[in-house]
Length: 71
Image (cartoon, rainbow, N blue to C red):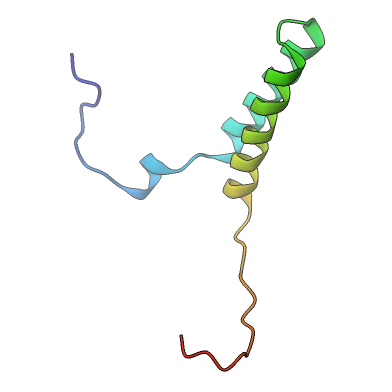
């Protein structure tokens, strides 16, 4: 059984969309409220999902400091 039917790689396949991350965070919060997940596991998973959500929704820019470096 093949994992992928298409062997082409493109940008959309490697990205994690914000909608999926938000849905996963909501599901995780529901599991926590129902007592189905331990507090430590909840925090670890929530932290990683929030990072994915921020990565999908923002485009950070680094400040360029004029220190005399030639980059």
